[in-house]
Amino acid sequence: MPPSNNRDWQPDLATLSWANIAGDKVTVYNIRNCDYRTESDFTVRHYDKTFDLSKLKGVDFFLVYWGSPKIVHTMMSFDFEGQGNVCFSIETRKEKGEDYSTIKGFFRQYEIIYVVADERDLVRLRTNYREKGKGEDVYLYRLNASPEVARKVFLSYLGEVNRLKEQPQWYNALTDNCTTSIRQYTMPYNPNARLDWRLIVNGYIDEMLYERKTIDTYLPFAELKKRSYINPKAQAADKDPDFSRQIRVGLPGKEMK
Image (cartoon, rainbow, N blue to C red; front, side, top):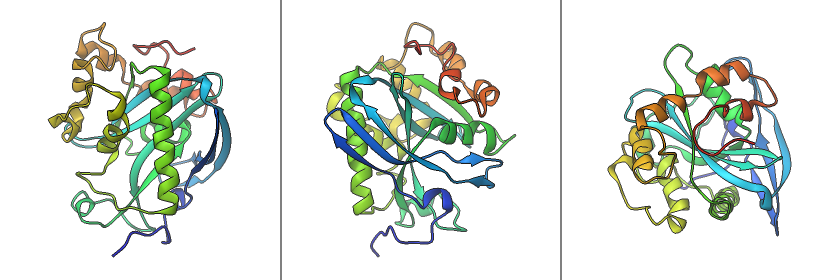
């Protein structure tokens, strides 16, 4: 059974993003920015935006704990000075009425989708609207990546976004998921990209990043993790247009300008 882009998708997953790259100018089409009232009650919105690659100053890493402390969902966000952030979430593309099953995720039951979205969508959905009272906790780490490396990784992501628009692909919970895909795109530029058990049991991946000095190490790890927890700041910012800056106030690592 081949993967397909033509199914009766959930409304928030129905529209694929794509990008046009012309030198330093990158136009990303269909950036998602849903207006949530609850997790299941929302208005789907998209916008197009042109970014200047010379303004790309860094990349940040989100860990989302949604159940077991051993497993997280991961997201990458690229910070363009004066132009905002572009966030990527690698997910299963679900049809209407379909729920996620970890077991089914191993057996070609879901297509993979790269959700390209505003942080007010992807982050706020998880901190402010999804699974309220059930402990869906979000941590944000600023990566010690140079603008040059951030640019290469960003373009790698967009290359896959464009490819999946033309050639759908199956999701695999073990070999092609939100974390293994990140390793795939960063490995060519990261001398410490060796395999580690925490890439599979990824609830501990921030410990691995700390050991490899990929994130801030000026604080003890326990203190760094405590200060990287952003739920209270995200809930306070909510619909603030300055949401991305607000959730980074006081965050260890590179300063948010």
